[in-house]
Image (cartoon, rainbow over all chains, first blue to last red):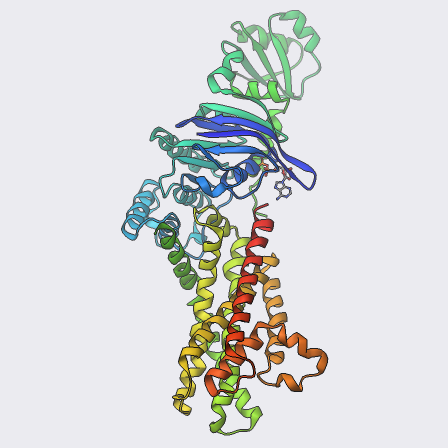
Length: 321
Length: 245
Ligand SMILES: Nc1ncnc2c1ncn2[C@@H]1O[C@H](COP(=O)(O)OP(=O)(O)O)[C@@H](O)[C@H]1O
Ligand SMILES: [Mg+2]
C-alpha cells in the first residue's frame, strides 16, 4: 500500500529524515514512535505532498508519488498535528467544505457531515464556529475532516497530544474503530503506550533514522515473561546497589530517581525480602508495585532514550507557535 | 466534474467567509463613491464630463476591490495553515489558485459597476461600447487580482501583503495616464507608465467609454493578457518553491 525507499530530507543542512525505508500493507495499523524533532511530521508532510524529499522514492497504492504527490491524494486522508480548519466557519460548514474539495456532491456532503458529527458526538456543536471549540472537540472535528471522503489510507500526526485523558481515550477508541472498518492507518506518536495499544507494527524513529521496525508482538518478545517491581521510598536512598546485588543475585536493580528503584527479573519477585532488605538498610519503603514490562522497556533498550524525557515532553503544554 | 465541484466551493467559501463581510462590502461601495466625489470637486467640471472621469474611477474601484483580497484569502490562510488543507486536496495547483483568485476577480468586477450604476443616473451612457468595456473590466480585475496574488505569495505576513499592495497601487493610479496624461509626465517616468498593466487597462476603458484611447485596443488586450499569464505563473512557481518545501 505504501512503499518508501531511502527517503531523505534536509533543512538548511540539518537532516530531518535520513534514508528512511519502510512498507505498510493494506489494512495495517502502522506507528512511528519517536521523541520531538525525530522527523515524524516531516515524513508525513513528504508522503502527503506538503513537502518535497531531497532523495528517495514513494509509492502509494501502486502509484509513483515521488515527484507527483497529487497522484494518490484522492486516496489519502490527513489529520495534521495542529488543526487546520477554518475558525470562522461552523463545524458543519467546515466538514461540508472539506467534502467538496474531494468532489462530493451536495447531498452526499451533507449526509456524510451529519453522519460524522454524530459519530464524533459533535451534533450539538455542529452550528457553532470552529474557533470556539475546545481542544478535544477541535481534534475530533479535524479527524472527521480527515476521513470525510472515506480515504483508504489515513495519516495521523500525534492525534492525542495535548488532550485531556478523557478526550484522548475517546479519540483512541474512534481510531481503533476506523482501523477495524478497513482503513490503513499511519500514526505518529511519542506516547509509547499509545503505540503499543493501537499499532500492529511500529518503527522507532530517532534523529530521522528508523532504529527498529517490527510488529508489536515481535518487539515485545525480549521482555515477555519478565517480572518487574517499582519501589518508592519515603526519603532519598543511599547507594545500596552493590549490597543489593550480593543479596539478590537473580534480581536487577535500577535507579529511576533518588527515591525510586525498579527491580527486574525473569523469576517471580517476592515483596517481603525486598522490603526487609531496604528497611534494614535504613530506607523506609512507601510503596511497592508490580508492573508488567512493556514496549516502553523495549524502546529504552533499543534507542537509549530515557523514558523520563519522553514523559517530560508529554507534560509540556502543547503550544501553537 | 469532481474538480469543478471543488473549484466552485472554494470560490463560494471565500465569498461567504471574506468578501461578503460587512466591512468589505461597505468599503467596496465607499471607496468608489469617495473617489468619484473627490475627482468631481478637484476637476471643477460639471456633470457633462462624467464620461471623461468614469474610466479612472472604474479602474480605481477595481484595483481596490481586488488587489488586497489575496492578503486574506491566501497569505492569512497560509499563516493559519488552512491553506495546507487545500494543498492536500486532489486538485491541480493551477486550478486551486484560479479558485482562490476567482472570488477576487468577481468582487473587483462587481466593484467596477458601482460607479457605472451611479453614473447611469447622472449621464447618458448609451454611447459606451459595452462589448469592449465589459471584457476590459474583467481583464483589469484579473490582472489586479493576479498582482495581489503575486504579492500575497511573496510575503509571509498579512500586513506585509497589504503594505506591498499599496506600494504598487498608488504609483499605478498616478502613472497610468488617467489623471495626468502620460505625455505630460516627466520623461524619466514615462517608461515606468508603460510597464504598468493599469496603463493599458485605463486606455481600453477610455476607448470603450468615450473613444479617447491612445493605443490600439488589440494591443491593450494582448499586453494585459500577457501580464495576467506571467503574474499567475510566477505566483504558482513561488508557491511550488516556497510553500511546498
Ligand atoms: N520547515 C522546516 N525548516 C527547518 N527545519 C525544520 C522544518 N521542519 C522540520 N524541521 C526540523 O526537522 C527535524 C524534524 O522535525 P519534525 O519532523 O517536525 O519532528 P517531529 O514531528 O518528529 O517532532 C527537527 O530538527 C526540526 O527542527
Ligand atoms: Mg511533529
